[in-house]
Image (cartoon, rainbow, N blue to C red; front, side, top):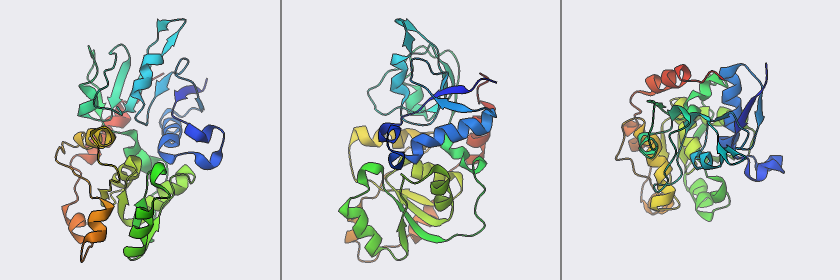
Length: 266
């Protein structure tokens, strides 16, 4: 069988294997698992499919010789509240309800959910928890002094590097008792393994936070708000207990089964 031509954002990882953001490169792992076929990276002009990532805006460039092409969209998300997308593609799944309403003239009803929720199909869940609190900074926050301060303050906290190999990152997240993450896919993977977690925000802006709210909308959660490093650092006595008690992701299994059922036949 021919390999599936998949588009995902490679970033600096295209030339430097040490800069491959696991949340983007997870896309190929998942598509290989559920297709049973080899996956190769393709530019958007020649791709068959787009899956994990806030990259739906790339659909505008799905053209050859100026002629619009149709892509298979499986769980892709929007990266901005101001985007508008063409309904010409095959929409099998999109990340959240907020993304869905940005699609004009939508001809089908895609399921909701990010394919990262299927991470337990990529690796087996570890039998024991080895990390008390996993700190997962978005790659642009990796060297943030605030992250370093949190690691020093929170007992037994460990920083999980998003540039580590995909399966290693999945195993580390699944081995946590609790996760604080400014990486969206750090939160998604934690949810997939049932690891309680909370959104950590170093950048409070409508643009930055949109993709998080879009993801949470797939669970019907519309009042989710992040905690900032300063709020934790300023607290006289901070612990994960309250966050763990409040943690819930209603309908997780339904989203997972929906994504599997919606995987495209290409």
